[in-house]
Length: 574
Image (tube, rainbow, N blue to C red; front, top):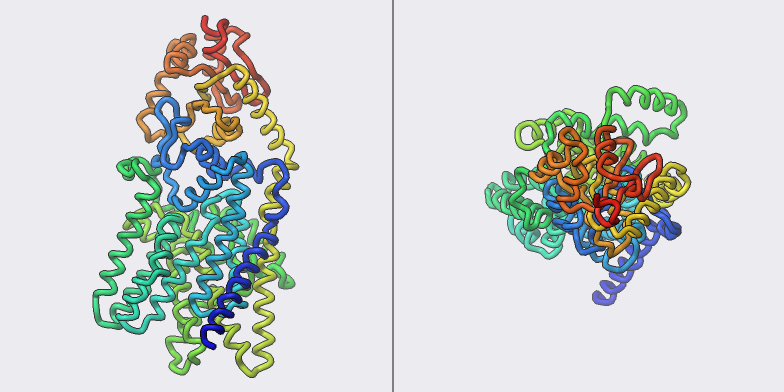
């Protein structure tokens, strides 16, 4: 009988988890994105399109010889700390689709993975299958994903947050030292730690934050330093795996490669608690308040992280968590069914104090390392903890005898789901905007025509002007992204200003000294084509290119960009 019941529960878990995945994909519009064209080509989305395109050529995981010619691209100069996500992207890139279809498949897989992670973690915490189904949808279809998706792409895939918050809660639930060590040796804990270590620097560091604040009091409670020593070892493992997986053979560039950050950036990219106001916009009278807040926020709360709070029910739980933690401290008669929400409320409080602008996270950035600047990215952790609190309270209420309690539980669950529906369709919205934006479509046609001319001329080594540092000059990404699969063209864009080769290339191709010989110097380096973005290239540089070439070498020209053949055609060698 027990075996049969366990089997029935597993089947119910499979059904509910599959339902969560299906619902999330439908709500986000994954069934309607397969028409031709990209989800987006603007903003930081190029930082996903670019590695996806390189991975299609077997390049770009840690380095690429197709970008940054003649020095090559080393990703350590602008690290991406998501090797697990990049490996998934690599597998999809090998399927043979174009770059835009590859990215669409990646998003479908990522949304499914987030829904599965949310469901598995809630079930691990003892939440029932149906409530875990609702919680997984709320976790995956969120304001945070709506703001980050198809823009801050790897950050928007926050499955690690569910595992990180779950590990912190499980540590709090341990009652004895033996239970603690049994937990950290379990397959779930170790697998979760691997996912956390390979799915993003922010999510790994926030996990260590919550684990640390869980283990330190636990060590005092059991009057033994062994749990804290174990945490130090686990933290070292997470950091080593994070760096080794992200930097690979370029790990020696750790101290010189990464961009420098300042502690003050926490004030720009930290959490804004006041932004919870957006969750209450449906209350009569508040829209006018929010309009005033919007006008003033532009001057006072600049930076990222806005419009990411997770709806009224979960936002109320997050905001009230300090009160819940204080109430629990002064109440010795808490029902056993509600006792499990206390650690979650305490962790939310710790997260708010740390990540809020000017909070203890600013002290961390000042005293230890300023790399953790975007602390508003803690929101997925707060959201998951709030979902666990909501599910636990709903379970308690639904098991009780009070009709009002059950009614409030149902209303809360409906509110959580309705908040998800209100931020639905991010994939279809991005696709529709890209397809209908005249300027974007004109740019796509321009690059398509220029690359067609490149292929016809047989150009293989293209100098991109202006010379710009990898990766933040957006326009230079598009040539390699739109280029035909298997072209193997080498592009100059790909060296960072922190890379020795960048200064070398810039000095060799300066237009300040003997401008008439600029093209000859480019040809001597090995370039046979020059691709110019007119809007950002100085007139002196464009004049220097024209001085060294007859008019016949101009093989593509429009108001935004020009392409010159400087090496293949006979008339361009003079």
